[in-house]
Image 1 (spheres, rainbow, N blue to C red):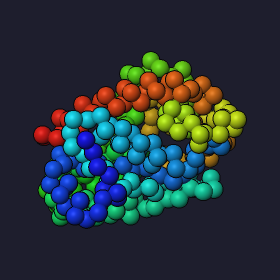
Image 2 (image 1 turned 120 degrees about the vertical axis):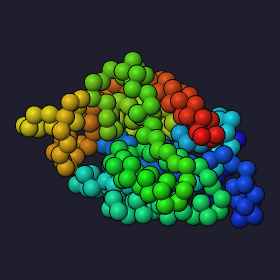
Image 3 (image 1 turned 135 degrees about the vertical axis):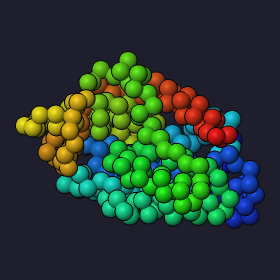
Image 4 (image 1 turned 45 degrees about the vertical axis):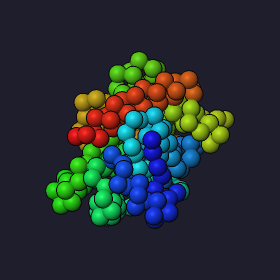
Length: 250
């Protein structure tokens, strides 16, 4: 059972918050996803996954309005991208968590749909726990199914707007995917060793996305399909639900 906070009137919210096991905040970004996926992709997928998991879970879940914009400076060369500073993003999450705490929420899950948000989320989790006393966790949903990804996807590089995200988008909202504009990017290999995003052993550099790819895509979206997306999503939901139901009594 789940409720969407933004749909409630305040007397309903007062009553429902007393019943819930946990609240979920979906987070994402407004950023380029190649010529074929919409700018809303990250937050739209995070929100859809949060609702689907909450609907199937035995736990009582409150879905909090999604934090749409994220930390996306590395995509700013592609028009339409909106980025906020890490400090701003963390402040928003902390303030939302504090508001929920004041209304009686005790457990909080941040369901993240954008890799660029990860360092900020990891930092703010500690503050939310220590300063607010909330039981809190965070999920990068794609990190829950590496074994399934290895079995299902054909690409060795499946990242941003590639085979993974395009398959999931084709499954969740096919009408928003510009299928005729799906094409494989021209990837640029960086000269430094261990520095390319497709390497499992790597160092991290503050590289901008246009230095990797000509069209904003990382990986091969031409290999994507709704069938693959369905397999990935169902595996994701199983594991998210398993976590949520355990976390409800943690």
